[in-house]
Length: 190
Image 1 (spheres, helix red, strand yellow):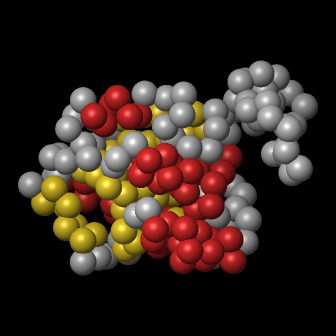
Image 2: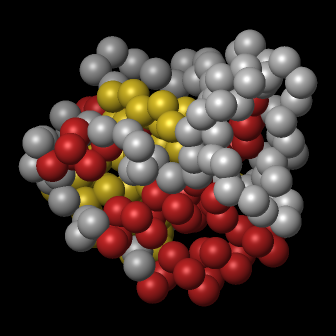
């Protein structure tokens, strides 16, 4: 069981948006990740702790996408991503939630997330969403490097690649930089 202080903790939900949610996911369906994310969000809101909703998207010509040469580039459809690609999953956002829009995997680089958290006195981040081995892992790595205590509820994460990739991230990488837990075993108190 992990109990967090509402005054020093925030929930960061990664890429629970139409375009990502429509992709196949493993080891659990995106709908289950969303349901668990909503449970966490309600728990944080009820205690007055910040909920940060992160989305990813790009200009139609992808001029704001990372330009580096890679062996397996992400698809860049002609004409850009679908119109609703970055729209949050229905029923997720509530008044008072904080929003971050990014153009890379992690929620820190090129956004105001670090400043937003520090100005609120936040030192612990709970990170969940899709994809475990992309946006979640990148955000947790960067947050840990910035000195935040990181927490990952594994059952509120999934990936768009393979169940094995999710398991490798949760078993070999995240435990070295975060505390791993489940939605049921995570509480927030004033």
